[in-house]
Amino acid sequence: MAAAEVDPRLLEVLVCPLTRGPLEYDREKGELLSRAAALAYPIRDGVPIMLPEEARTMENGE
Image 1 (cartoon, helix red, strand yellow):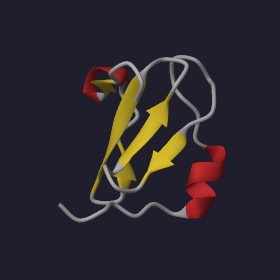
Image 2 (tube, rainbow, N blue to C red):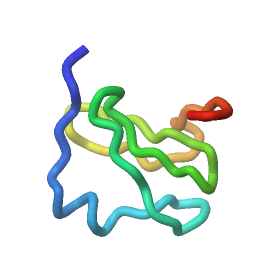
Image 3 (cartoon, helix red, strand yellow):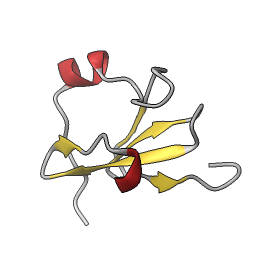
Image 4 (cartoon, rainbow, N blue to C red):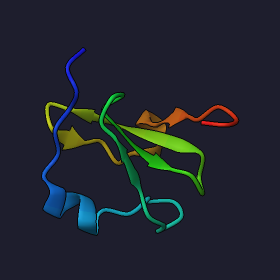
């Protein structure tokens, strides 16, 4: 799977919809990580999907 690219300016303003906290970009997995909510939001075709029901629950230590 190719790494999803996201506009860096968009990453500066996006926050977790649940915690309103910062997100980390995982280029390798093509996800935005919310450590506070332990959720990984997918990026599809360069568009972050910021819906909690679409997010993957992060494993411990991730």
